[in-house]
Image (cartoon, rainbow, N blue to C red; front, side):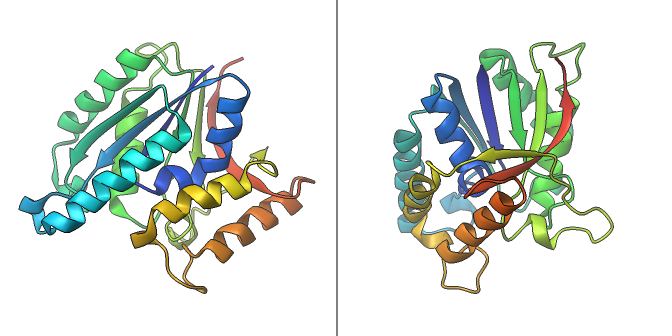
Length: 219
């Protein structure tokens, strides 16, 4: 199976699906990463910050051993002001190149506006008559975004992946994103990430798990 995770920002892929990606790779599946936004000096970030982010992305990509990494490098926190047609066209190019069977997306109701723009654009070019190769679409649970989303549309997991053997590797990947981690009770602390895996594991008779919501599945 070809599996592609789509992250609005670098670290979303690991927070939401890191253990699952590692597990799927071990099982012989192909994994791909499509990242949508990135830091740039012309957007106000320092050269040091941009260089460090590139190091993080390269290190993370190497750790997972992705079959392909695609970075659109669109401006963070600005997607809602862009023409969606432009974003959709860029995403569609990647779809056609990879032809993924399972796409893992951010939630439509996550707190960050970039997340719902990415979800909507990814879904717009995932229609079955346009991309018949896509057989499963799920949203992932991203700490610091999903749990702060719209109150009337909470994340409703209906797929759990046992990551008991992958949790420590997921933690190691997250440590690469040193600029995104803070101490507990910050939701992107290593303790909180592990705690969520415990809760999702408890709901699925596993030691540790990641949870997803199936939007569409074709058998």
